[in-house]
Length: 144
Length: 104
Image (cartoon, rainbow over all chains, first blue to last red; front, top):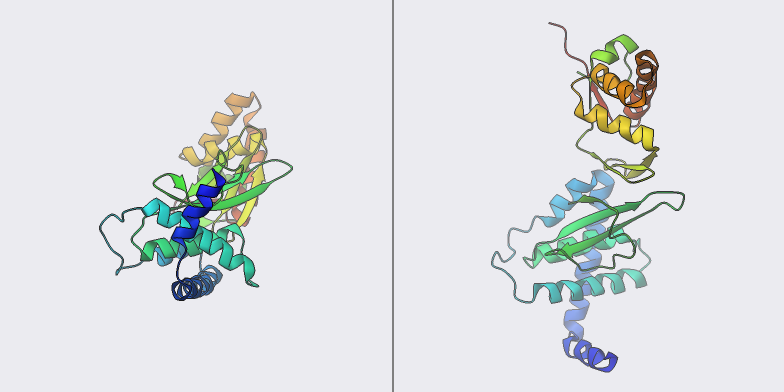
């Protein structure tokens, strides 16, 4: 029921201060991810972004829900900024946000062959996507 | 010793390896190859895709040529010539490493 979904979303809404802090974290992570990609390859960038020694080591309750919410925040924040908000950058930023919170995640790259070639990236937690997969689910090329 | 441009005779004794920074997947009509260092995607037709698969599993390019000659029913010399061109092009793009045994 859409109305109930909206109510649930409203309950989960962050206070303005925490929203601003999250937006800042997303932007700072985006800049770091860009810097890493410009100076190295993708696996190296992912490994660096995933390196979060201070993250909680115990399983995080509600990790999938948290991951989806962070995913939405990344998409919404990057899409309103004059930055590269394509799928790979979104995925790299979300990978870092999840790592800092102790939530393990996999970055997936897919490529659809043929005349209408297309490639896509997203992040999964426990095998479930946290970012839109589109029609690339069956074209997985790489998991990091 | 990894090389990208080696004579045809030396190439046959070389081992072709897909570098760690390269991933590929074979689909029905095309093989997609991704170079993680450059971020570039490359496409191979089914024969090219099969060549890459066999090369990556064979101890030498000559051994791969023998397998492909059997599969396609073509003269070995022709397959070797095709593999020489194929390996050189992939190596130049950083998609294949050709390892020639160092002289004793």
